[in-house]
Length: 313
Ligand SMILES: Cc1cc2nc3c(=O)[nH]c(=O)nc-3n(C[C@H](O)[C@H](O)[C@H](O)COP(=O)(O)O)c2cc1C
Image (cartoon, rainbow, N blue to C red; front, side):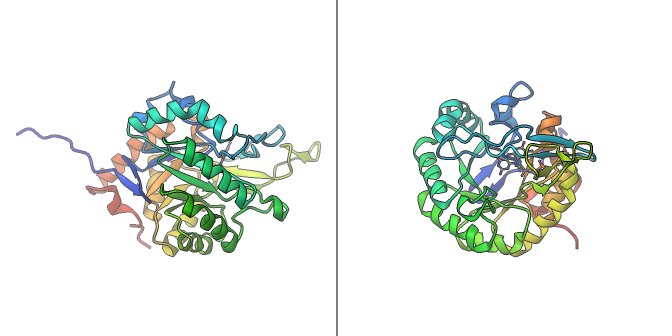
């Protein structure tokens, strides 16, 4: 008798974005995919990539230094969404990203803005210029220029206002990237406003002070903490949000192994993004795909979807 090792089904549906496996990359930590091609065949390996946040017109980002390494498996960044604008992004990366789609890897384009109007302008341009986008991720953590820099999605009402304005502009799936607070309440508001999926968490605000100079270790006083050190917090927030909404979730935060991704899935995530780990281990996302598949097999499941939310509380 010949036995063949048929693997479990790893395909998932993130609110209409049909991924060959649950593994995605977190915005801003994977370039726009092409920067990692020297390490592995991105298009043949990952379920999806999420591109860096892009606004209607180019943004410069924040002054340097914008990155600091912390003790205990974490970094801090205040890159500030530096990007070439939608036209510049499409010119530079459009052909490559269409190639990823052709290989079966979904491409999620991230939309940034400082006001509802700026999000509308950016999404309208993406609709017109980016046929390669499988769907859009709306980053509601951008600072709102009309409200003294508070995040655009800081309250359920503000997050829903952005979502409601964008919903009529595209038939493609919309994922909303959430900041790490009030995730159940804000998640419910986003679902009601028409979001197809949610992704969480974005970085956690922190500070790192050089005690010798008494100045911040970055150019700005506060910055976003990410990496393995925030993983347990992210798993808890995914779990809280998953119990509050019925749309699918992409779990993000400190994922660097198949076991980390499995925790996100058990907590209720349908897809999982690898973020900061890409920066210190460029082949991490590929390894996470392999380790996660092995875990599903070890659990005796035929389909990864059977394990979504299977945490035994
Ligand atoms: C250098 C850097 C740049 C980032 N840029 C973005 C961005 O453009 N848009 C966004 O929504 N999140 C951005 N993030 C946040 C990540 O997508 C992710 O939500 C966060 O880092 C938590 O995941 P991790 O711990 O796996 O890195 C960035 C993170 C880092 C470290």
